[in-house]
Length: 275
Image (tube, rainbow, N blue to C red; front, side, top):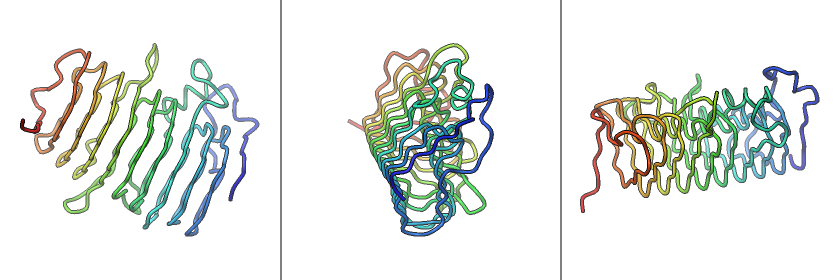
């Protein structure tokens, strides 16, 4: 499927957008979807059970979900995504405000070894979200070259794991900038929720700026975060990097700059590289 555009003519009703089915639902293996413009749908592309799919050059402003993947038991390739306010800019427009409070650019549920590259998302509550369904959780997620600009939480993990079967995320060259202003939802730049035990996150060349809460926050048990060349800037919460659980650890090469409060909370555990 290629060279398609989708426009929902009555989407702007003066209130939240009405729930609707995705514009494209892919259930077969080895699908190719490219050059698709999602001008303003409630939900964009749903990769439902298919594997070895390639999604390439996907543009638009889907308000609830841009790309959703579930029940996929092999690698998929998502490349060159640009989710921008083509239709409704942020501000007092109701659908754009709803999108910022509720929308997710890319959501991965059961998804084995997905590869994501060259991703840009703007004005979402979550840029990339790793969640769970009855089919399972994501595993071995690879994210390369991504900018989550104006997103409340850039990278979000809510994927319950277990020993030997953790949700794992590797990301390189990722920037996250949260929105600011009156009435803007507050979140954490990178957030591992309490349900996400046994998660492992590896981050290289990560920049998180202007988060409403912590720049990085880990609330789950048995989480390991490996960070190299990490810059945390101008967070508005109490700590730049916060770890709630005494069973979780971060191994960091990290710089803290121009943030309020103390960057290391008393309950946090850090293992810094020795000189």
